[in-house]
Length: 119
Image 1: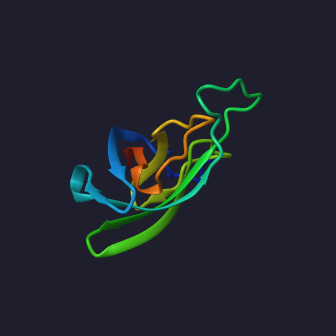
Image 2: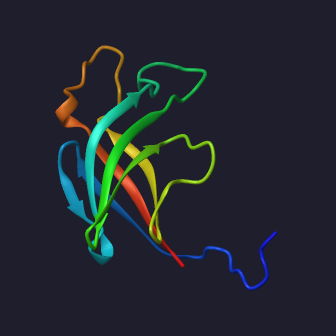
Image 3: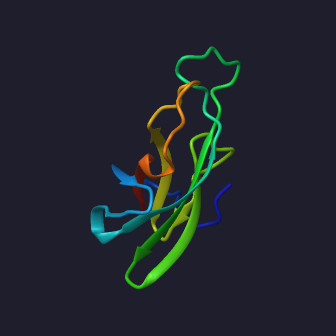
């Protein structure tokens, strides 16, 4: 239930950005997103049949107009994706995909992050 006069958050625009670990990109409106750390990668390898798809978690630092915040993004969310000001961020994909017989260099990870401007 909304308080009198309160309006629900309305998504205005969604953009996807790709950022490599230890790198930073600039999204729409000058929002800077840095991929700081791979926290978890328990995704099911592509060459294995799994009961559960698994999850990936990363830490990003989001900066705009001198404000900065560290956020934890997950592919499997247990609720609403985290916000930074009037932006909502969601981890949409993480590459490379896991394979059971291949070890991934931690510097090779690239995250695709959905950025939605909310009202």
